[in-house]
Length: 127
Image (tube, rainbow, N blue to C red; front, side):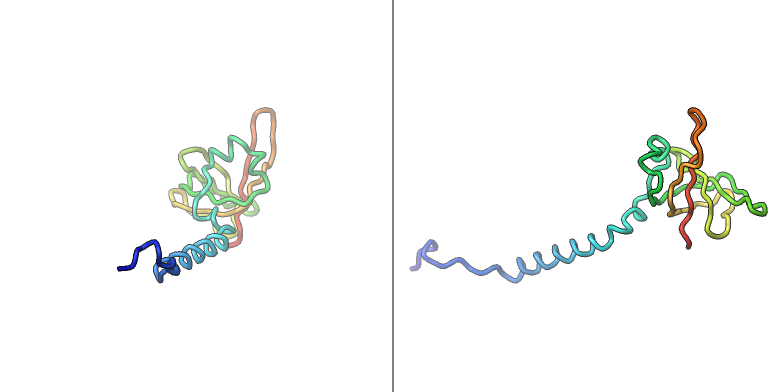
């Protein structure tokens, strides 16, 4: 009878190699997707409003209900509310109807600051 301690260690089995390969593949997919990860997890409008300097010039995705819409000649925007705050969106296309649920990706811009009042807008990316 052979003692277990006298045997040479076995090479990793098929399951271990498959697990290593699957892990590497998942990491690769995650690294590729990082550029669009923000689209999967929308930023809360309240977070943007609490720290506008952090988000100014950054691309984010917001999601919520359209609570106001304006489309008169050169004045086009709509307001999105997500329960944490509201933000005006300058659209790249058609203005959605009030009551619509939207998910919008764009660049945050601090349009103006007057005293303690700040107007933040989101320039929508082309759809």
